[in-house]
Length: 279
Image 1 (cartoon, rainbow, N blue to C red):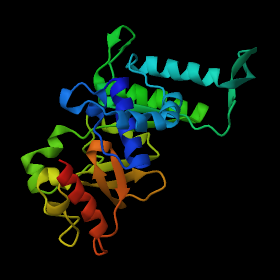
Image 2: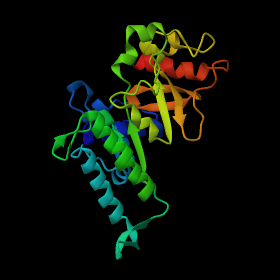
Image 3: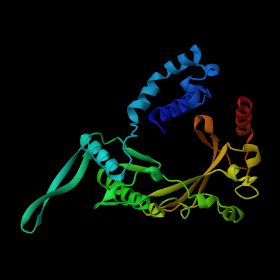
Image 4: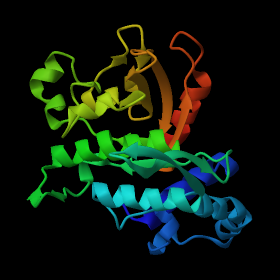
């Protein structure tokens, strides 16, 4: 996905949250003669120009680097431009050698999030004259480079990783083993060892499940594709198995926590109804 497309998605989400306007990212291009942006819509976008500019200034989209070493080198340069790497000396074979001691950012209130979307699309690279497999390249990026960014510079790596295609096999569907799992991670399951917390996002509607979770859960036939379930699959501090139900509007990339299934859902159902009418 290009930088422009990601930015359009962000603007679409912003317009919904700030103005209550549902407009698909593709319609922001205004290339369809039947959906050219009106002067009123252009005025609303201009009114939110400050927030859009803030997105552009806060988020740096990098689509020209996709191999592990290139990603790490780029982020290392970023760290050194925005902070100071202090050194200390140790004695090795009767010689004093400078090594990295600790890193201090210029802005101690800033959080740097390094998002890989998604790790299965990285480019395998060569090592010692041999081309690494995708599995090996993912391990190198996750277990070596991303851990360094986290531990050395206090950066926050966020890795998006898809589930293996086999997770959606007929056998798994029959056995009800289709929701995201650590065992189902695609291309390299070892990444789970490096993560502080692992989240899975599940759509029961995709698998024609009428109610979820269990028989006393949400009516998926009513929500259809407008519901997701966020689950903690694992983490260093526990919490595995915790599920958060979410209302989901894919057009504007919007998520909102749902009331529990035995609570009144009229307000949410009304949102779903409006979406159906707009479609």
